Image (tube, rainbow, N blue to C red; front, side):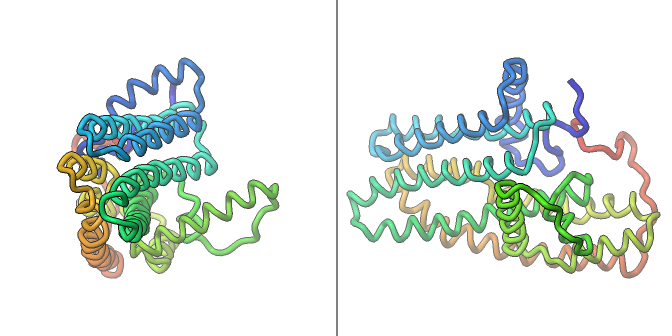
Length: 315
């Protein structure tokens, strides 16, 4: 079965545990799911079910077996979360609706785990724990949105992969096409969420407009700009992966097994937030470096390095 884009994400920015563990397992599962004609949205919902069960298990984290069960169920969610996207790309069944559903399932999973842990912690420490957990959840949402925005931006400018939000940001305004009420609402929600992602992550409208303007003014840079983007931003995206859900899953498990999940929530609020601020600051420095190349006309039409095809790894 052929697809116009790779089933796996680009290796150059892939998070380590996804690259070597989660997504290889998901890739094997996707072959089976495709043969059974299972839809990507069904895979997303199945993953969410694993996440909710993980929350139930973590509600009893004082029992080490329950903490281990919660971790295993979270790993199962990660696999399904990787499989739904791979399946969508393999079967050409990806859609904005599916992307919204995937995001909802991700947030429901962590909400279930946080509620499970908060329920257990509340019995031990009192109701004030819920304030800490809610604050941690809000920080988590912002951090995850910032990380996803950077990956989407990279795939858009480096590989030319579709991004409705970035296409809107980097193009002049045009009249909206008529749409069914339900689809119109989904498009509105997706657009608002996408813009919120880029607002939180430090990505600016000026950046996307300037790159689009450079491409319009100098079409010969169509090959050079993606190469330049890779050189400047690929190392940065790998640093952003510290905010991925994988490390949160591991952190939750370690703290629960140590009978101290409250420490995880404090680190979510303080530690991960400080990391995000540092990453945003460095991202702005990278933007400046990228624009310096444009402003001084240092770019030339790109040539591929030996062994490089100019296509996403895995294509």
